[in-house]
Length: 262
Length: 262
Image 1 (tube, rainbow over the protein chains, first blue to last red):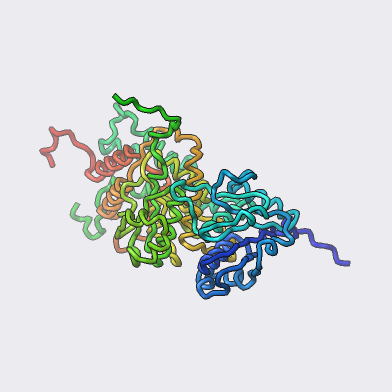
Image 2 (image 1 turned 180 degrees about the vertical axis):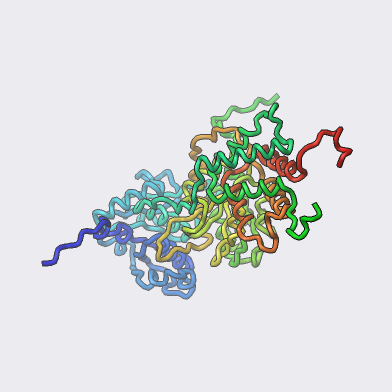
């Protein structure tokens, strides 16, 4: 009988929470925004778009704005009401402009994303966005568990619909998976001795050229030391800097044929 | 005589860091994206848009997409080069797709936003976005201190330009409203022009001394540029480095009484 090969990747069989999060657009009026929302979703790893009574869909403008996320549009579900869109979910949050008259505490996107991702471990969840100018109706907000608001400039608080979807999907992605280390670069650090060798070379050159008076050194070498400590020199950089120093000390290079003049 | 009304807002006279953050779009090709970027900025409280060689600006499509942020477009600066756009800044980050070949460590948006907001306490800072499909050139990335990448779905990693600006401005607003630790040192960062002046001086000295062959420059200046971008030079350090360079170029110092010998 075959035995299961053990894998180092313990996430392999765990469902991806982003696959259980529906992005619901209620009554979107601009097809371009539907496309932008699809693209925003796919760049963050979400795929399940639900449209409630879109003014125009499918639409060439939506497809064009979706770019590489055309498949998200193709798989989008179209519903006649928000109730229908939320069927089968166990948690739903509603995007609203910041309002103080709502009974339920508003979440900021980061908290909402953490709660939705946690909820996705237990069942289907949804994040609902309203019409571009009128937003969600009170009845629609009431169908959801809590309102979510994006912190904004009070003097200009209305994000474009696609941009709002992008911000929330970005937070959902961060909540679903720690992004890990950012690419760290290809640094090959110089050793202590290499850096000291360079600093001694620099000090010697400055003394020989009269820039540094060994009798009155002031803070010159400590300053240089601090500068190159901050930068964390690479091996190759030390070699280049020492090459530059040597070239500057010996003066302009003259081709071998001209050396007789000296 | 009128007395000043006391206000509960102790932040009143503290400059808003968001006012010192430039959003730079290099070579944007779609006017709609310029408008979307302006709107994304204003909803998050940013106002300083700089455009490097936009294909079409001003443009009705940009104005339409900017919605209530038309003033951000009206006050946008148009520059001929990224160097010009960065004049007067002391810190600049470059948005790039996630790449492992970059020598400098990449930041995620949250860390980058915190660093830019901290940097804005000391001087002007910038966040640079490239062309919609080709991004920033290597030369443009080299003019900045570090790359920034948005964590994305590896299978679909290209955000719309306006959406990318929205995500970064959202993180900038969050970082600005909860300012972390104030920078502790007494750093007085050098400006973009001061650093460029030093790098030009260094390049000239290396050419004059035969260390750098302008016909076969290889990767020498990009390497030097990267080194000093990492270290974030201080004003006084630039002065010292230029003094060292000048002293090394003119050769050993001779006291005035001995000058007759030359």
